[in-house]
Length: 382
Image (cartoon, rainbow, N blue to C red; front, top):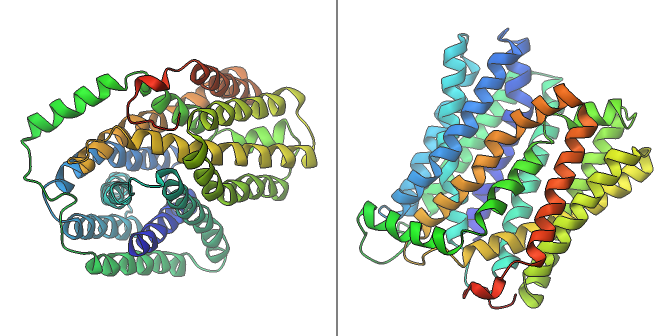
């Protein structure tokens, strides 16, 4: 997992820097593109990333990991490179979409490499790497862009190339050692699995929907409702993100030992209660930071347990396709959430949007109190 972890960190570092900092700022200030075009470009990135995860999984079940990851990272590099020279809006959008295509393979491969023992622990490690990379990228890019757009761009390109070269060291084997099944048979198998775990499917979408609803409105909510400055808002993000990272591995180990159910119930429930408290009480800086810590720990409790639970229902001989389909289902929430959150905030205000997200998480937590975990043969510790 060490090599895959390094590649994943580099990929997510560049993606965080590109999508959260470089693309919006460079597109508006250097290329003179409207915020609408920039928004469409970022949406195009996530649409292609999510939609093609299923296809990437299909390829992983037929070709070597090295071929799929190496090809994907090269496509990612091409998309990132084109963004710098996309003076036309359509080129900018297409470049961002191409960049999304190349991102897909590495995350799916990392999921297929998680062993049967200590699933949640390893899931916690993967999410720690993902969060550190995704969070450190924008921070670094913001500092560097104050000096030079060009240097920022070439740094991101260089890190993309480094990840591409490292992928050459991946063992040239397929994700499984069995003969490939016809695509129709694989989809039939996955459809049976989806029917078996149909009660889990709403949570797959609602979890990412509730979280992504907050993405476009949190800065405005922090400023208008909590009265925080940009610097204070940064403290809030660092507190929440930092404790999420710190909590992922220990929470993963605990859920491996104690079972997944109550980590999901308490994690979702406390997360919902924390959001509700912030939305209704609208506390000051220090109380907000305290709640950010609670939210971070709650999210750390949910992530490893949730993904380890999903891992039990991935067909062992079609892991690439299985994780591709499940990631696509979860990605539906990511694609819908930001637009829904923005619309709700425009109509009813940012506090109402946070409150709706809080209720959504609380409902998920209550649902899993009564969820029949024993009906799922794979979940041994529930």
